[in-house]
Length: 357
Ligand SMILES: *Cc1c(COP(=O)(O)O)cnc(C)c1O
Image (spheres, rainbow, N blue to C red):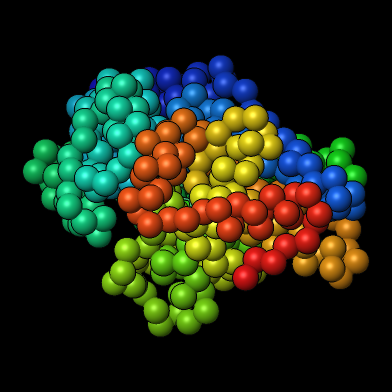
C-alpha cells in the first residue's frame, strides 16, 4: 500500500470515528395550538458540533475528496463560503491536520468569522459575493491546494439513498407521529444540496411528501424554477445568510422541487424572532424563512380542511446573528421594519390564519 493510501485510510477513519461519537439531531415539534390537525416540526441542525446543517455537508465533502483521491496529507483546502460551510470545514480540516482557507464576502457576520478562526481556519476576504468562486479557485491553484467547492459538489457528495442523510433521519424520527409521512418538507436553498437530498429520497422511497423551497425575494432560485432560462440576477440576493443566491448553483436541482415560496427578508427576520421566542432560544434567519413558508402552507392546508404534517429545518443558532438580525440598530441601518411582519406571524401562531401578503 502506498503512503498516500495509508494517510487517506487514516483520515477517513478519523472522520468515521467522529461520526461514531456523534448523536443524531433532534426533531422538535413547533406547536400551533389553534391547528390541532396540522403538526409542524423542525429538524434541529444547530445541535451539530459546528452548529449548523453544514456539518453534514462538510463531512460528505471531505469524504468525497478523500475517496476521489483529491485530498492528501499536505493539501490546503480552500472554500467559497458565506460562512457556515467554512466553519464546519475548518473543523474537519483541523481534525485531519490540513490548512483551511475560507474565501468570504467582507460583509459576513463577525461571529461566523470568529467561529472559522476558532476552528483553526483562515479567511480571505473579497468585496462582492459573486467573486468568491473565482477567488477560491485562484487561491487553490496558487497554493497547489484543493477547492472543495460546496456549490458544485453538495448534491453528489451526499448519499441521497441512505447513510442517515437528513431525509432518512427525518422520516425515521417521524415514524411514531400521528402523520408520519409529511405532506411537505420545507427548506431553503444555498447550495441546493438539502432540497436535492430530500427530493431524491422522497422519490426513491415513493413517499407522497413534496418539497417546498423557501427562497428570499432577491434570490435567483425561484426565478430559475419558474423559467429555466434565468441563470442569474444582478441585484444582491438579500441579507439572509446561507440561502438565496445571485447565480443558480450547480447543486440546485429544480426538477425535484415541487413548490417555491418567495419570502421577503423582513418576513424571514420577523419569523426568526417569533420562532426564537416560542422555542425559548434564538434561531438563525434562514430558519425564519422556512417558518414563514410553513405558516403559509399550514394555513392553506387548514383552509382546505386537510390534516397532516409539515417538517422544516432549524438550520443554525441565532447566537451567530446577535450583531445582525437580532440587533435593532442593524435592522434600522438596513431600513428593515419587521414589526408588521412580526404581528402577522404571531397572529398565525395564535389563530392558525395567515395573511402572508
Ligand atoms: C447552507 C445553508 C442553508 C441551505 O442549505 P443548502 O443545502 O446549502 O441549500 C440554509 N441555512 C443556513 C444557515 C445555511 O448555512
